[in-house]
Image 1 (cartoon, rainbow, N blue to C red):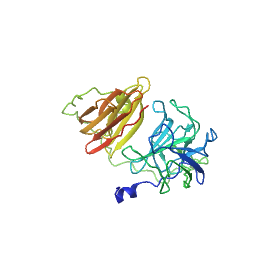
Image 2 (image 1 turned 60 degrees about the vertical axis):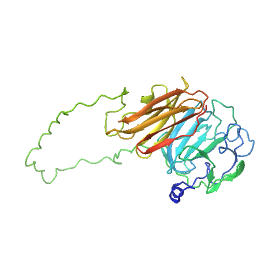
Image 3 (image 1 turned 120 degrees about the vertical axis):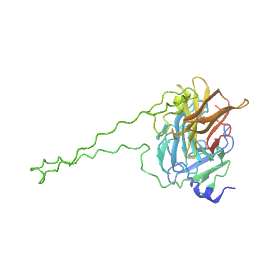
Image 4 (image 1 turned 90 degrees about the vertical axis):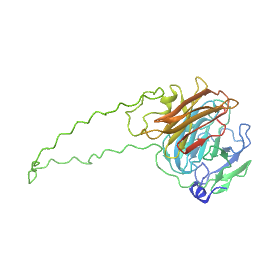
Length: 333
């Protein structure tokens, strides 16, 4: 049973549609494992829902916004919430938010569609609620568990935010009117500093050379700082795109990537910090095959761990220090 603290941290999910709209949900698809829901405006309404608005079921951060081919999701958005749980919105006609965007509950994130590289489907929203471990759980809306296998639900998602899906640049503060040139000089001249500024001192050359990394390092995308200069894409290499990720407390994250060109998955665990070293691990297990793991004391990341998993389920995860993530088998496309 979940602790009182865990229940308090859990968001109060609402239907992923605008306030007061009614939608018919069904879990009966052949492609479902049990708790996924397909939503339509009415039963068997064909493509009449194409282009209708989809909103965030709860506030959170967008961790996936991509067109996915191998798993059949098509245009997919995945949002991670305050307690580590996630919601997935698939087959979208259009995605309105990007990875890294912070979204409010009720904010527009896309449109109902029928996108899929694997299945021929009529327009609908494929929706999932997942626990922090990645397990698909029974969906709850407005505090009430969805009545499987099917139910008509009215949306109480009425706190829609007008906030944009992407951070907006801060406008320059140009004056609204041209400012007149002062007609006279300041009344008092500014005093000359009593002594000149001291010149900056040259930094001493470090007395110790930096150790050579124990494994080949890709070229970082930015100069080394106290943060990690590497990305999962750099570590896995060209052609890979992120299809899932999970935070490891505040220490970093583990990322699952996929290459449509090769049919390979790749897992990397990235530290948030680039200072010192920590015990870091990454693993990938293709169903029916042995698990592959990379672990050790690393400064930046563990991995890449890659394997061919075309149309085969994979289990993936990793750790940094005491924080760990282990997925169930999934991404079976």
